[in-house]
Image 1 (cartoon, rainbow, N blue to C red):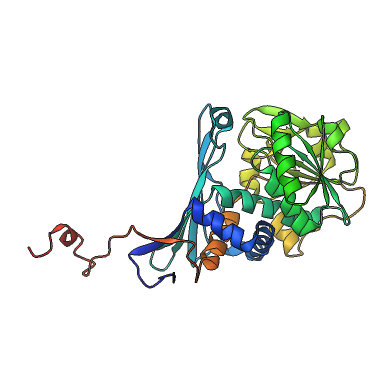
Image 2 (image 1 turned 180 degrees about the vertical axis):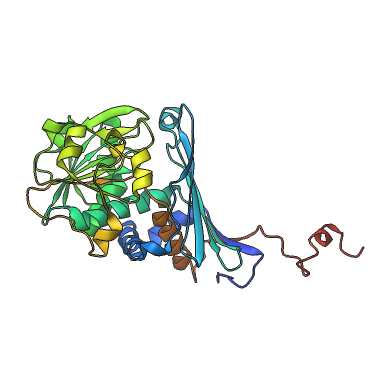
Length: 349
């Protein structure tokens, strides 16, 4: 199916089924590697983007957010929720969809399911940051929190950073069993652990990915030695932290967009002027990343709209000359643009 960009009344829509087909056709690890390169290219032109903390509507049980941005030529936004309670109800903690539009006309050019895509771009971003900050030659990663995001994180770090072994821990053994089974099928060396401390044995990269909407410290100061990279990606929101303040004080902290991270990231525990380095500066060579073997680096990841913009742009390009989409008739497009009402008059009247 040819993508009909010229037919303004039709918008390409990528459903969950077609997103699965697209990722399978590319390969999950290749998909994340290519997406990481697109994200890095966009971060290197950081000043072109509109930037604002995401618009959040919080409740006692979760959060619903909009994440918009534009580079002046394209506009993108993502709708995403985070509801930790959903797992116990047989529902996904995170669901998402997104839209890409042409700034010149305001017309949408892509609508897509983004639940899978969010997991892929989150993992791609994590491993991209790891490429800049993780100790050279690291081959083992601790994966603490083995829920829906965990396999993506492990496979992205294998594809982009060369990780060979993952050491898994989750407070729910069934989650670890699920993750271990999936990763073993993907050919990864997996060690299932009974405690978080055990999972960190020999690991130079430590990924924390929990989803509790509460102050629940996952890493305490005595658990972290020198020379590691911490990838803190848990379901961030006000009142949610994973990393103890002692570790934050010992680490060089790297963030996507400070005004958002200070609201939702682990650094919400710290003073408003606690020093952080923005990742776009590292990617452009304007700020130092890892500078020594004993340094503790930490990516306080909360996700930012530019990453979703990159993902939308990547998918828009990848579906060209494929049948991984369907055209939606979602835009009124009368022959006379001033006569919208005329579309309601029956033909032949």
